[in-house]
Image (cartoon, rainbow, N blue to C red; front, top):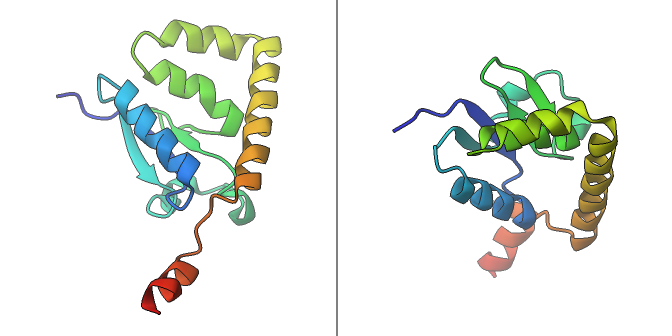
Length: 129
């Protein structure tokens, strides 16, 4: 069994983010990616402004590099089976990365409109009734 070389950090309180994590786990046949929630891996996100930490998913590379949001997409692709070549092509093309960033921004706007964050206090209070 391979040991994880990459770390994917996502917001556990976001339904879309959690589903994305499950998809990545299913696609990661070589088990090169360790999944962690942002909430449990905040120490890995030093340098990311506190008010921006939950705005995107984050990838930590084997060398310790940090990529966030659209910039993390090629890193994620490279970590998946048969994705290394495509990840390098993607990263090397300004036009493709511009499209990735535009699509990622669209998804984050969509995510915000779905209001996928769950307020644990409100949920707990509702269950306590």
